[in-house]
Length: 124
Image (cartoon, rainbow, N blue to C red):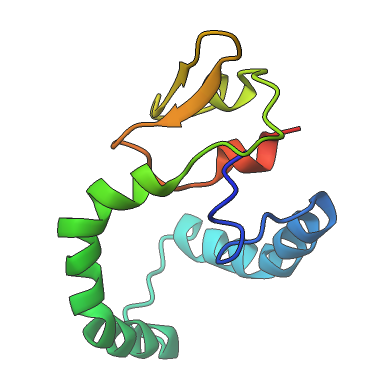
């Protein structure tokens, strides 16, 4: 299980995941209704928020794109509780996990890791 990300990104339990999905159901239904009816909404208050935050965080985004993409993936490592079950590797959408080790195979995250944390949420 990648242990170093949990300080910044705690893994959501099943109940938390269900609560997040429940809170978003109304917004998703409204969005789907708008799209499927052929209508469009060009401008909302959320667009203003996104434009402002995008402008504020632009430099951080560029920094991550140029530097972090190749260094953050290397910060993920398996802790001592890893049993080598390979669930993380089998469920990685971008095949960013290789197994290394002579006696006990441990996951190793490659540079193409998207930091989606799916591996950690599925880890037993």
